[in-house]
Amino acid sequence: MSASKLDFYIKNAHKRGSKILVLGEYVLNHFFKELESMPHTMIKEQTQKNIELLKRYALEYNMIFIAPIIQVKKKKFYKEIAKIAPKSISYYTQQILIPYSHWNEKSFFANPVAPLKEPMIFNIDGIKVCVFAGFELHFDHFWQVVMKKKVDLVILPTVSTFESHNRWREILKTKAFLHSCYIVRANRVGEYMDKKVSWNFYGDTMIVDPQGEVDMMLEDKESMLIETVSKEVTIQHRKDWGFHKELKVREIK
Image (cartoon, rainbow, N blue to C red; front, top):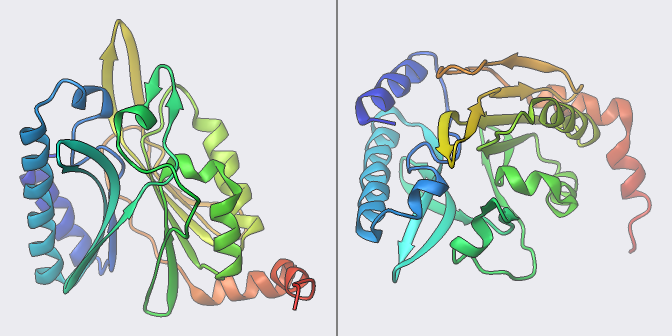
């Protein structure tokens, strides 16, 4: 995404009162398959330029940016998610990466394979927010943290393709309902051609509420979704369904 286009979206989000702006995976950097043939220095420069840009915007507009980026350290690549706030910046290193033969991020990136830790968690205006990578959605460890910490909003930057629309929608709706939280899924759009195979990044950026309903969804064109989340809604859902309560009374003292 060019700096001028990013500037356009950020200014419009600020005018609408947005506190957090989320980008999909491989929006600030080239797609994984393209990285394989790019010089380390070019990728590093691309990342540094975009981080500095977002740091400036965060300070100017008093916003938080959740931005997947590729870090280059000692000529090794790391897949991370940056949280860029007006006065601080922190990183979440993705813990589980895609390991398949046609899409093997696990072997390309140097992210450590180690016992799982908690994902990124922070608070804003009383809302507890949890951030982890799209592929990590498939693993219960992360949702156990969401449940234990009573997270109100889960942010999932993704890069979904290959006609996985329906599977993603159903998983997101189910997870939101079972864990009494909102889920924001920000998916990349565009196309990559690999040996005559089209990788179509279909968008479907959406926000799902704790009832498991899609509040708003974008299509397959580049655009911006702005929505409000409510702490009262997540609290009421926990009271109504009692999932947290039933687990709490069974905890080992």
